[in-house]
Image 1 (cartoon, rainbow, N blue to C red):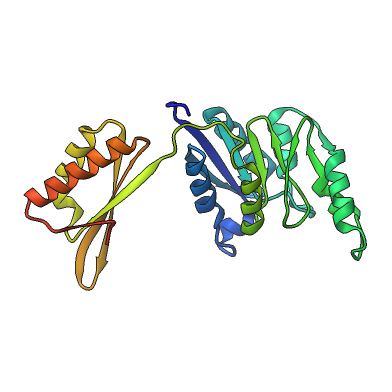
Image 2: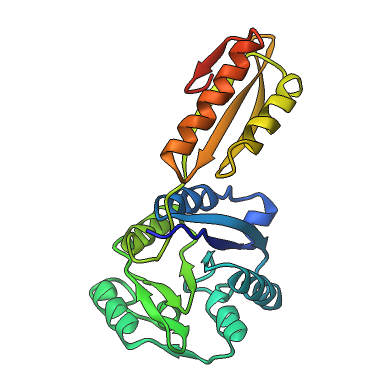
Length: 252
């Protein structure tokens, strides 16, 4: 397990996301899965069904991160253009992957329509790609270089992520603890900053809330080191206690 921080970018593709007709669930599940793999989600871009815009986003994020994931746009219809965009970004042709075709032939055998031209689109990949197994709906995901093309449907994406579990090189997983306090975050801003500065491997996020007519905040402390995390949490709790504030380990 490396001390180096591994990062990933995510491109969420689809007009339906940008229009608000569909609420994205993939960002959260990809981020959570990546953390367990020891990889941090560093940037997310949501782009429309436009090849040129997808190409720009793919090239920017794949070059800035160890890994890039895309969700959406790998289905059977004319507006499923992610494969074409990624191939263009990588400067390779689009080809029919023989294993993907065989998978689809088996999946659609005996089903109305069989493996028609529309469904065969789901066997198209950037030249040189490998397949990501999909136990939910037959059509596989795609891996080419450090780019991973995933489905847009969340439960199908979840299955593809499960198939990738343990296959990517990552660093130490990010772990976290939460401390809650009924206090406006502005009143402990100095304490939060000083505590974080004293623990170089830790980050403290402050998340305010308003409940039952009162203002409070949950402070989430993150680190890749269990010992450093404990030290940071203890320091923060000591500081809150010294200030005469009640706090709740685990959050409010």
